[in-house]
Length: 118
Length: 118
Image (cartoon, rainbow over all chains, first blue to last red):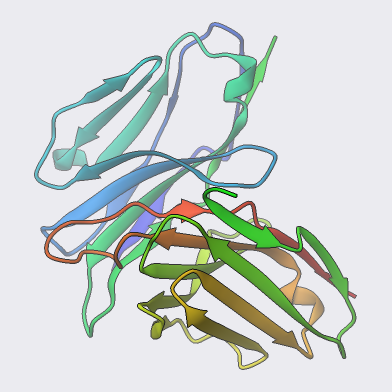
């Protein structure tokens, strides 16, 4: 069965600290996509990154970086030099080719609430 | 207007009321989605429409009735709701639905409607 686990419910850091948000997933498919979304207090989910199951190369975008490891079924997200504006709930999600025509539905983790204090 | 918009942003309704949530996307996408976000639960996919046809219905109670008159608009009609239906209802759109042709498409979310059922 497909599942996304974000074990950290809440994390609090002080500005300029580095922080890593963990994501572990379960899937039977060999073809799947992993996502991270950010949900600020305004409520709108903001797409951050998509990764397909055949590309294990780590990615860096400014202060954000992602570490995809198929061996441990993890797709962790690191923010370096955190800022107050990074405060939000972060969701990891999985999309897979399912059965019976159910394709690509996003399966979300429960989210990690990040608070960055000045 | 750009992106995905939702109205109203906040809604309070009694259990005997009938109301509708509206979603509009200005991205030229072909797929639209309704999600429910409750406290302490992962985001739950409710309905998926692709080219105005319902593709997915994840066993949602019949008191929720979706309507997709065209690829830019999506409605969620509500009637005789229960207090446990209080949640943030998010609409999303994507260029295509899920893993079409081996290519996945990220979903763009609206700001949500905060629904309170009294």
